[in-house]
Length: 342
Image 1 (cartoon, rainbow, N blue to C red):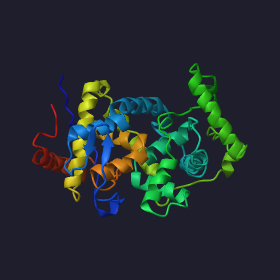
Image 2: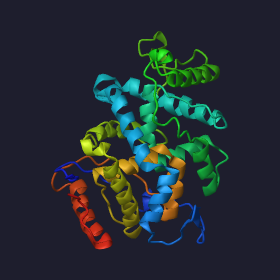
Image 3: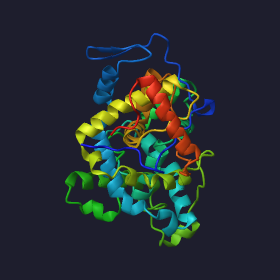
Image 4: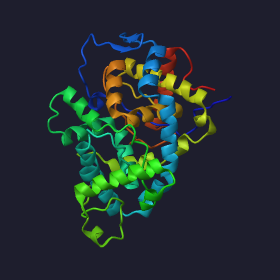
């Protein structure tokens, strides 16, 4: 098959500098063992790294779940900034920060599959695509997180790997033909009502008389999550070609994602811009398990790689396109093969 991953004017930028680094000291002699595989070297054997990612994240399978989630939620978020007043979006942000994340923390010790209402699910997804802000928020919600390892535990306490690609669009999900889905929604609804009573409906209802007095949230500790969520609405279009359903294609993408991380490790002060297939694996890694993402980055890269989707200018001389071209040169120099596969 012929795969062309570079399309004019459609790239994604990942700025990396000192301000974007969150260092966790894991110790100079830390080793990771997976079966008979041991990874201790700085350059890394890519097959070993891929095995670890396959065992702990199941990156290819999880990427399929991720894409399916984006396809299902897209009708609810596409055009949201145009169809919903700012006050509605700000109330959803309040619901996410003040109600949903505390609910997750309150139920950290349970095995329940928790399903977020669609407005919250989208913001939760977008927030996990900003590892630095998400980790900071988790720590703010966990006052005991004083050290770097405490911060990792704060992330771990909010882990919901079985819930991250689920959402509920409305009460009709309680009658879903999928009994597992309806059961999970019912469980989450009951937990929500136990915590918040009738003060805040589980599903967002802008027609409710109480909505006029609803609380708002414009940012999260200075981070503009609403802008980030708006930028992420177009990502589905970038990964909609048929090749993104092909396991062989995704397996190679996972392999190249490992190499992309090693390139970042070797060029810490550079702007490295991922291809779309690499970007899908990167997004999948961040959103499926923020805890493992922090752990893996520090093991394989040496620091936590932050993600920035704020640059959207795709003009020929823009930082986005210029940095992509520079990434191609660095990739060729570091790995020996061409960055853009055909």
